Length: 244
Image (cartoon, rainbow, N blue to C red; front, side, top):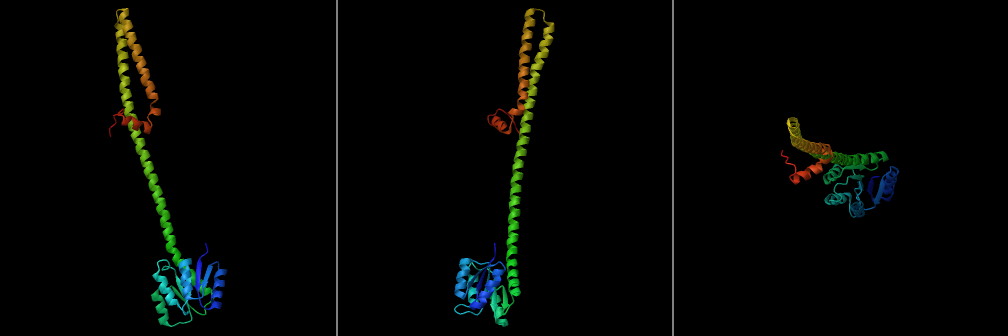
């Protein structure tokens, strides 16, 4: 976006010449031919920079600058004084009031544009630094959020691994019981002296085999069953006695 320059100059021809110079340099230029009008435009238009004549009727440049610096809306707008007076006392008065630069009439187009560029560049540097800070702050905030999310996922994964290990240990213990019973039934089957005893131990073998197969199927379904969400639900209902 083109920078907006307010020119306050009571000499109509000088004001027009400055406006043309700035327009040719791609500035958006607004003008006022007295201090009161210039002050009004400064508040309503909020330009990026003001070029202001010093000697004007009704309200001179010093009065304009004083009013600008007392208003929070306009207090930070750079002001370049345009003056035919070169008295050191006048220069000091302007600087004490907060003028950013002086151009002595007559000045060249190059002098005017250079003075404006210097002031605008100085205004933009803090803005660029602020923008860089805000971008880095946003990136750091986003990175922090990603770290927190990944940390939560890691904790859930570790918790799930612990729960799975707990369930696996329990299943291994449960698998040992029917195996022991099967081993015992086989031993007793070999020692059986009657058909009744053999039928009894065969029945035990069948029951323990069915129990063993059921436990093996539970182990196959473990990976599908124990998602982080299911593990939390099981613990909430005290179906998993997991302790850290």
